[in-house]
Length: 301
Image 1: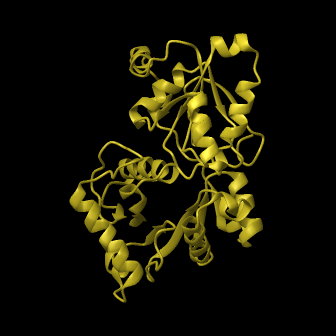
Image 2: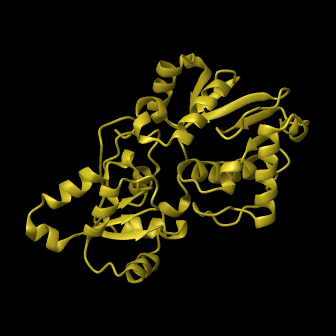
């Protein structure tokens, strides 16, 4: 069997979906070989994962995005040509016209566009609505948690038997973290105190206002002993949230290679998200041995 996986999110700025695709494709290729697991656009080897940059060269990135545009907006059957020897095509929400011959599959990561549309940009909402039409025609679907599978069945009317729940994988780096790497991260960011850590894109769904309020409600002696550390790129955060970042130690975007030692260095990992399809940061923190405080919503329990 040969599969082609839509890997366009690996060429653009992306967080959870990019993380998922990067490690999933690499794992599948180790198990089945590169000939059995191909990508659209064609990417034979990945550069180190960065959420703010492409995993391949500038030329391949430009050409890959051009092929996506041709597939979505031209009359030419670009994906039919790209998948002519494939048995399965695995789509993301960036593909508008999947190929006609191979069987169609996709992964459902979350249902926040339906449950919390006010927390999304108009572009995200349009992409997810189009994706819903695509997955309604899919031969099979993956959901990254039972919570997401239940929400998809309820909100989109998908038959539960059509969905296989396959939890996202966690990189091996989180399970065995060198103490020297932890110390290097402490020194790099000047983390001399014990600290409470949040890692994630700064956006309304992550509920950072509650985290700021909770930390400020602690006794003065505790706030003097511990530091609140926020790591992650600015997404579509409100002006209020951006202003309150000044009350914490905001590290901005932290390279992927530093996330595991940074997480292991934390006294507490706090993630009060309003909804997660899977919740990579929480599971990564558990793998790293950090104490975790999180919400009792969606997949997080």
